Amino acid sequence: MFKKGDLVLLIDSKGKRYLITLKEKGSFSFHKGKIEFREILGKREGETIVSSKGEKLLIFKPTLEEYILKMKRGAQIIYPKDIAQILTIGDIFPGAKVFEAGTGSGALTISLLRQVGKKGRVVSYEKRKEFLDQAKENITKFQNLRKEEWGKLILRERDIEKGITEKDFDRAILDLPEPWKVLKEMEKILKPGGILVCYLPTVLQIFNLIEEIEKNFGKVFYLMGIYEFLQRKWKKSGLSLRPEDRMVAHTGFIILIRKLKSSCKRNKKRF
Ligand code: SAH
Image (cartoon, rainbow, N blue to C red; front, side, top):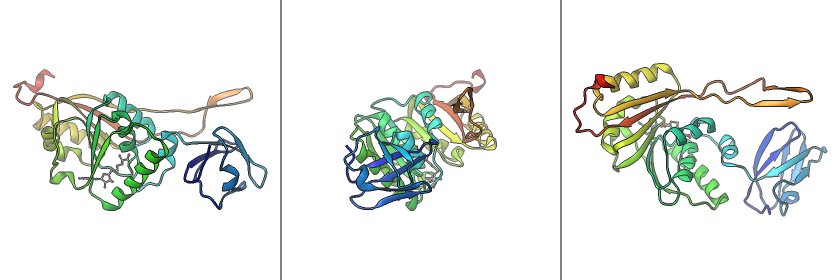
């Protein structure tokens, strides 16, 4: 049953979604009228509520994807379609020790914490305090909503170009504009066989990253692949079943890199 402090996802007749925090008193207003919070309090997920202008809305607790898309952003988030792939091709497993930079709004951080579970840990660095504060708020709010077996989180307000204190990570994920500047750090903190995932919005950045690996880190890192993932939603209306007119056409590319056992004297041409 919905109670004070809960997050509620409202879906109107057109499928438009609204995320609200329930309070004891007050109301939520939108272009199709007003809904008093007290009408939602005590209701269950999947029930319908009617606004002052007669609009019917479904009420649910938000899924992690819905929460991420609606939560307050400091920095631009990694979209759930890309997060899903990072978790899968980046092989983030329960119990893993994962490094992340930057924390941004915390969208990826929350997803990592869920994936590594209570035996895992996530260490996340962010150089801007205002983003770190926003991320903390976003993460805690969702964790309070869902009593799951979250991983342990260590957040640090720090520029990773100035060094990383922790080491022996299974996985590292960089959502930074210039990841090629921290490959030395990644070499230090990742275990052999560890996976580095870089998330980059433009091809020139990918080019710079791979050039740097080829020139200076050929014996340390192996490029597994460069990926782009598209997600297209469809709709049915009467006899017409077809893709929606709009889609998120571009977000970022995912670059998957594997750490080699540093001491091995391999010739980079063999890869
Ligand atoms: N992945 C995040 C968004 C990260 S946006 C999410 O899903 O919500 C990129 C972030 O990297 C920004 O917040 C920026 O401040 C931070 N950043 C950029 N360079 C950095 C550095 N050298 N060290 C730490 N954080 C950095």
